Image (cartoon, rainbow, N blue to C red; front, side, top):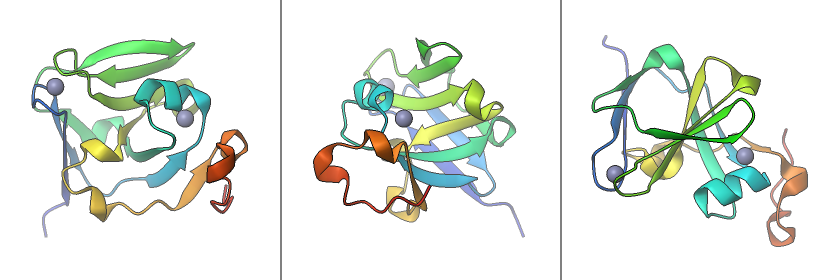
Length: 127
Ligand SMILES: [Zn+2]
Ligand SMILES: [Zn+2]
């Protein structure tokens, strides 16, 4: 049996990645930093180990949004793509919206639920 394969792409296709094997987690992040980085109220992340991730194109551009954090984005179309931080060293997290089949990744929990917008606080605090 061959290992499962996942794909991610920005809007224009200049940054595409392939991930081998099951994601480590899928979680909704409510932190302010993710809100600013993505422009969305909640960010759903699909986490992989770095060694599961292979860029099929050149790697994207990165912005150090805070100390020890690198957020990947496509410099051509502006799509936010990835998160890598010291807190989860050795992992690359992809935003669910850039995954090829986002419907396949159901979040298992909430992260930074204490920073959630008031109208989003009905989401059960699982973490
Ligand atoms: Zn792009
Ligand atoms: Zn966050």
